[in-house]
Length: 337
Image: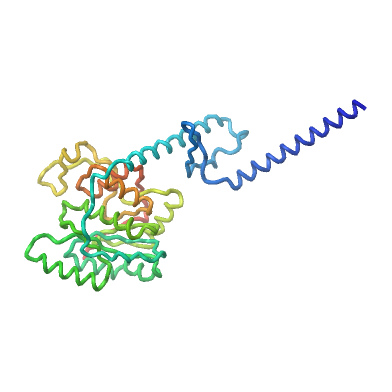
């Protein structure tokens, strides 16, 4: 009887073990099938979640001869994400040093009131470029917006005309243009070449303040031709794999021009380094709204340089760890008129 009891107990234990293993196997299978897009890492006794880490290549542990090395690589990647987050948080906790408190002369603040707006086309211009703005409205960007069923908007960003004999006349025409089209944002800085940074920040600020629910902001100069459907497709492709990025024509290893006679002169006091950071040429840029918010906050805190494309897409982007990408569909050509 004792032998029978022991055998029975042993059999029951074996059955229980098999069922337990089978249950665990099913749980693992479910996790592998439906696992979320993030891993959890313990760092300094705190649980940190990092997203978009690719686990597909690792596979089951028994299939990999280098599983420890792969886990170490995964941990290092997670650790890098933690360090990036710390870097960004550190910057955003610093005080604002570049106030952008200009008063709007014209501001269609309700242009993005509809929650449907996904795409915001922003176009820097100068007050007297009336024919350029008209050509943009009547071209591919204007057509795209008209056919988007309210899901996209086209806006122009200007400063004040310079103090010349024509200033009052130009301003009157800008006011008439605003009344007719309602697509002009005019900020209270003098619109000269040296104030390009103010205009770049003005576009970021307006988008964050008055159109924060948009998915993408696409900046196009007022003298270029673009293909809006291709631009939007490029943004969507990149957004599928990255939350924060800049699309544009990348410039790398450029050196600052120290010749005072040059239009692009950059003094050593303003920028002491011998090489410019990678940046995007300003004719065409694309950002997700999350990136717009990061860049705007960085621009309020990072020491400025007047070259807007270098400052926003190079210096500020580096401070908040926003990468810059090229895309063959994200292209522009200058008008020949």
